[in-house]
Image (tube, rainbow, N blue to C red; front, side, top):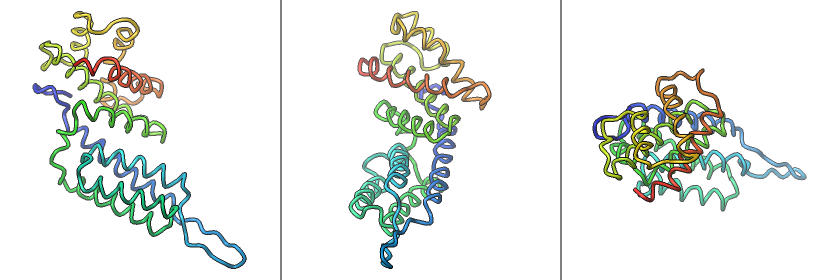
Length: 235
């Protein structure tokens, strides 16, 4: 999974991101046809229910931010379109505009025009991976959530070890965990929980989905969140 630089191998991550773009493109279609009220013969403009389009848009926004960064036109335009949707109360034309911005981001990603995805995987965006993993879990995509959470955890552990002056750049996750434990850099309940992580990571990265349950994925997500809160600021 990790090369000599200690960074996440982006080929699996590119695949996970591409899968998530496809899932969200498909899930948008479940909102169509849009709703329409009939009052005394008067027909309102078609609209999307707030709970539907906002849930979809929140997931899409997180994915675009993780893929492109906050300064990219794709992200800026999506945020602006999101605001217009709120102001228009889900009017169908404005929601379709939001979808258009998402599809533009998807097209560029699928076409290989995102040149800095590897640069996005750093400490400042681990939270994005956790958010994406949580959203994937909530939508029933356990396997996607497992890959995202395990990738974030593995890279965070390695970066933390290197920041503490340890030679961890060539270590696999299990060896890195043992090194952190031996140096006393993790302890207590965190130490016990961390011991279970390599097994889950190995199953996720080798697509052994039958060996990973939803509670396993939830434990990885929770551990990453706790690790970032209690350790990463020290790195």
